[in-house]
Image 1 (cartoon, rainbow, N blue to C red):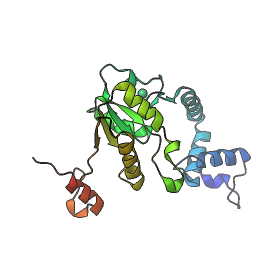
Image 2: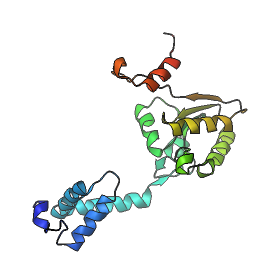
Image 3: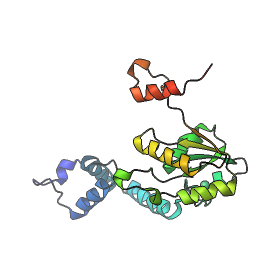
Image 4: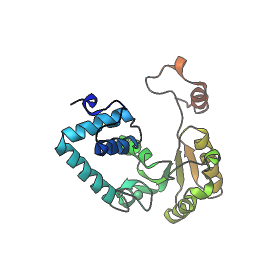
Length: 208
Ligand SMILES: [Zn+2]
């Protein structure tokens, strides 16, 4: 059944229930009305998959939480990274969002632990130091005897502002502070690299 069969001349469906479903799907990030309509019609046609979706969403909403220690998305709290004896608590990688932990864990080369800020400083958008958990971070650094902090933040104005704030916050504690090098992507062509990336790659050049 196509969307056309459901619509009347005004573009609204002849079913308030379907309209409501489309409206609630369109409120999800990244879904426009067109995609929401396609998904809604699929869910109506495939009752089993819509029931499975409801159960999965309810279960995730009930069980998934943020680790009370590092902020990563997890089911057990504290998360398995914070609980693992194999992860070095003195090496702390600071990221903005819980999803930023995933590429590190997928790559598997980092054996330290994380701290998720849950955002970046952005005075223009009203995100100030008091809005981010810097107190909890300072406590964590003291408690775990952190000796190295790796800042894995976006290469944006907000990322830079947050990095400078963290540098001042942790200054004088005898902590080695590093940031991810920004460079030419593997397989990327030098001629098409933007000037900020090129400048950061040049500043971070290494002997070989
Ligand atoms: Zn954790």
